[in-house]
Image 1 (tube, rainbow, N blue to C red):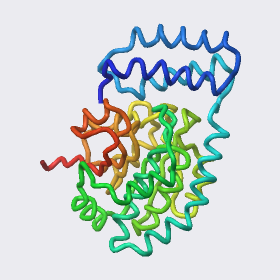
Image 2 (cartoon, rainbow, N blue to C red):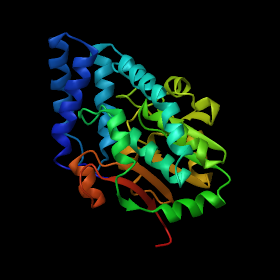
Image 3 (cartoon, one colour):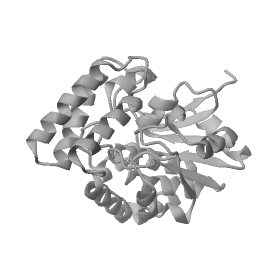
Length: 283
């Protein structure tokens, strides 16, 4: 997905939020905004938003000296999600369609996104999404690929949401490799966050090798690219991964909530809609 004009102020807001989270030193925050402003001035509009995000968070780390500004917030989000985990398992157990319910729960976890600057209530959003209609619903294709898949590559998004991913992975019933960011960026899930979420109990965990807040294949390491090319099925969570992979030349299933107008317009849906979208190369 390309960069749109509406993405530009969002980049500045992300830099400001990250800067304020990392430090109270307003001189450093102003320097960060100055550097990011100059950076944005020169970005090509045909680049993806996560590519610019990678540059922004490099500046955050460099100027503030803080590698993981959202560390405590991520820990809190993971703990809150883990507290809900038993109740959500009950919801799956009591449902008529366990897989579909687990997909809904995984998408509900996608509200835990500090990159878009919106407030969220995890429990309220879960309850709403369990009843919400899908704007794009490629469930039939999903179940068909799942039935025939021997290996699944699951691209994680945010910490805390990772606990909701665990619920879906448990329902897939196939060997899963769970992919995390190589270094902390926004509140995206890292190896440490995935372990804290219990994902090592249900999947192999690997890094993409990238520090971008989304899967940009050119930024990823060879080991990940090999898994990406050879996986029978790929599940991609969240907006950042969609932005990076929406034009990729292979089958991918995108699970997300459209939390901003740019993403919604790109998908042809309304803001806050929930999505289960397939890239189907046969169509």
